[in-house]
Image 1: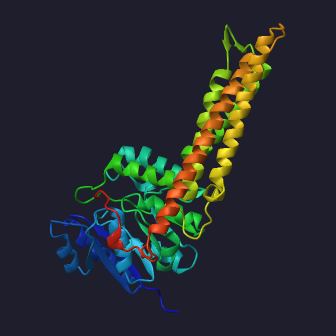
Image 2: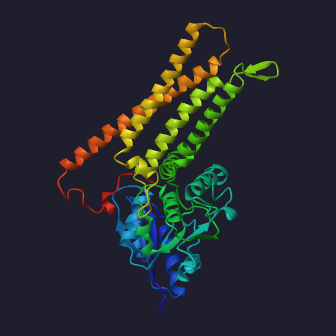
Image 3: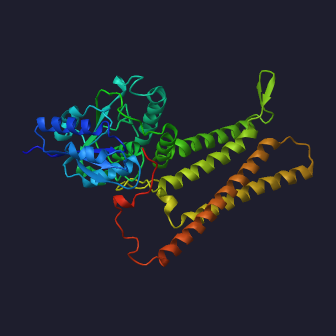
Length: 404
């Protein structure tokens, strides 16, 4: 069987000092390994002559007008002709002479996506302290949570190899540095086999285009869109559970829980926890079901949120819950009027009544807003001419993102 062809895609923004060395190193390594190969340099608006230098070194240069690391990579993937695609940076940080080693698991059919991990060899000269010990570990942890398991130790490595035919499965859409996290999360959720091999990480040649805080924030936004469990559903369940538990304690100990010389009244926080927890759960369910980051081919979660009957049921449950709270309030008022002197857990009942009213109002309001938004969506679909949205996204249609 003939060896598959390999295309290396290098995003490039003012890398005149290093791009030629990267192209030469990669071509020499791939040719020595017997691969039919090419290097695609994606110019992302360079003003230092990088495209001409890359072309003279043997690369095929394509241009992507819209700025952003993701935009450049997506343009390069679309232009590349190889059976296996490799992505790296044009700043000499990655060992491009080890491309044959990186693609070996893909060629052998043992993996669908291979990353070159940098952390074991990273130093203060090659990777800033905050990136090495804070940013990358945190993003790797959150990415693992979003994937459902830990798949790699270095989620932010930009040295990767994968088969071209897995691109539709990945369904990549992001245009900035966050594409690194998106590729991992979508690949893991789609069931692709992911592995990594240890690589050295060399000092960068030229100035870095990475913006620590803005790029880090874009990664976090993407992870929370793809995995709302991290920010909303998990914490919401925890808060709601705490609210129920504290409410139960209030009934058992209506006078409060003695803690040393103090008396703790859990009832005061129970209502807050119930409401905040419910709001987080509802928001997380809607986000998980309707996010534009949904993985292609994978069943949407919380499908009941998208059902036509959901707004009506939500409104009805909210109404009945609020009525139950008002009924308890009415019973308490009637009991007070009788003034028969019998003890009553008024604080616990009052909190239960208040919580039911607020939770019911929250559910009812959410149901009404859902009904309104659904009605507008239906009207918009009726008003849109048939075929107006039947467009296939292209690289040139990506949203603008900050430069690398």
